[in-house]
Length: 357
Image (cartoon, rainbow, N blue to C red; front, top):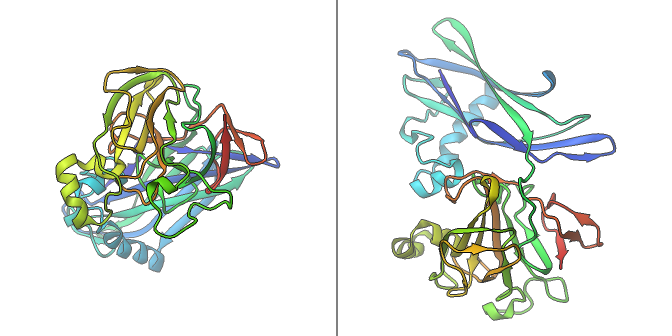
């Protein structure tokens, strides 16, 4: 049996300490089980053990009907990510699954695959969860076998000091605790969308709004730290369609990345960290690939293009320059305050209103 995971080395958690307890919050994007034997095997259970210093804190087991349900759902869950663009969005690669070999039952024929897509873990304990142990029990002939795998769970701290990519009061959404938003995607796990509210604390205040009617539209986007522009795009039109058939022409003309992020900038910072800024106004970039920028320097203006339904900034930190293949990283900021004026370093909740000067 072959056991593969996304990520394949360690899992990032953003622990939240409160009243002498710690909430660990992390995601296993995918678990793949492949039968590499010459005979059928029968899956009996899949278990996840959350551990702290080799001591079991919590155990989650899928067996019998629960396992049947998980396995039965896998093919349906993956049915919309079989094309190269979406496969890389979710798994960082287009060949993690062999979609034609995914089994519909707990019986895996030779070469058959099964597993779990997006398993979320939230655990409150006296200390941070530091390891996730995966165990698969299966029958090979009449013999009950167990295959184990383990992933370290680590708290990631940024290697550089960053400022927020916009100035003023902003409403943020799509943060990592929104399980059905950015977080499902490999590079966007810790991405943030940013826009501005009107005096009534609303994004929309009349019907048929134009881009210019939104407060955020045209506001400056700034570099979060010194770095080099390693990729950018400035020609994608505003108000582009979401629907697959309508987007096809844009993908063919501009490519997959602009059709997702619209006009964008990617900056390489020190210590192997990269920031991406998406949905920028066409022809608003005062920078080009290869340029050096300083922290706080304007690199574009907030627009509405690509996979966007209103003017906003899409922002994310990554461990590489490739939007589809790089891993998303949590980003900590040095100049951020909440609505009460309290200093915060990272957005731990969805739909927060924050301020920066």
